[in-house]
Structures are given as structure tokens and as C-alpha cells.
Amino acid sequence: MRSAALLLSLPVVAMAACSSPQHASSQPGTTPPVHNEPLQSSATSSPSPSGDSLTAQLKAPDGRQVATATFDFTNGYVTVTVKTVATGILAPGIHGLHVHQIGKCEPNSVAPTGGPPGNFLSAGGHYQAPGHTGKPESGDLASLEVRQDGSAYLVTTTDSFTRDGLLAGDKTALMLHGAQDTDTAMDRVACGVIGPAS
Ligand SMILES: [Cu+2]
Image (tube, rainbow, N blue to C red; front, side):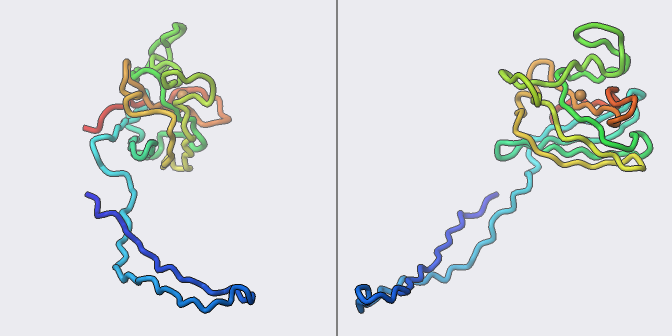
């Protein structure tokens, strides 16, 4: 619910600051009307909990719930919030986080391009919005920094994909990779299919 538009009338102060003789006229100044309207506070712009939000429940390959993610679409961009729900699962460090191109989160699955099976490989590669090529890819997000106890919290924004784009076709999945600079950096350690909040 939005309040009426904020109408703020600042009285214009006519400054007769010029002291040069040729401007020293004694025109009677017109006094601007002064409005003493109460200042209305502007509406706060936090994402509204509307039905436009999407969510993903990130789970480890063994099914343990790792984190929740929300996608709030407002003002032409999306605010992505990722929060762990358990400690002791994720390794400390900085984990790659991307939207992948297929809404599947299957342990021990085969990539769409074939090859040996692995965790969450059937989610395919990084999501690209229609018509977008190159890097950063549309699904690339800020990384998730995991604290020593395995917990993490990230809020980031992007305008590189839309709600409709995430839900189109095979839908999409939010994927968390292993910690950077470790042997498991390229692994897919948690995955959640992106869909409407239920
Ligand atoms: Cu990825």
C-alpha cells in the first residue's frame, strides 16, 4: 500500500547577493508563498513479500538440508539471499555460487553432454539468459563465504536474469560448489531447484 506521492515544496529563497551598482535596483521582492506542509516519510523500499519471490532449498548429495535461498524481484533486479540452515556441513572458505541451466538436483547423475556421473551434474552448466553469451554468464553470482563453523549468509543483487527466465523450459537450479583453492573447488556440494515460494 503506497501513500500519496510526496509533495515537497521548498520555499525559494531569493538572495539579493549581487552588490554591483548596475544591479542595485530596489525592485520590491515578491515573497514566495511558504507552505508548511508536514513532511511525509518516504516509503521504505525493502522487497515486498509478494508472490513474485522464488526460493530454492539447497541440499547436499546425501539429502541433508544445507541452506535456503530466496529470489526477490523488485525494481528491475533480483535480490538473492542465501542462508545456511545447519553448521558443520559446508567447508569453511569461499564457495562458487551459480544458477545452473536445468532444474534438477540429482546426486550421482550424468551431465546433459554425457560423461561419467557425478553429484548434481544433470543440472548442466551455468544458466544463460536468452540471447546472452560470454562471461560473466547470466547465472554467475557473488560467492558464498562460509565461516569456520560452516555457516554463511549472503545477500547480493543482479539484473542478469528474470523471474520468467528462471522458470522457463527445464527451469533452473541454484548450485553451490566446493571451497576455492581446495581439491573440491569444482565439486557441486549443494543444489536446490528454483521455484515459486510455496
Ligand atoms: Cu556452478
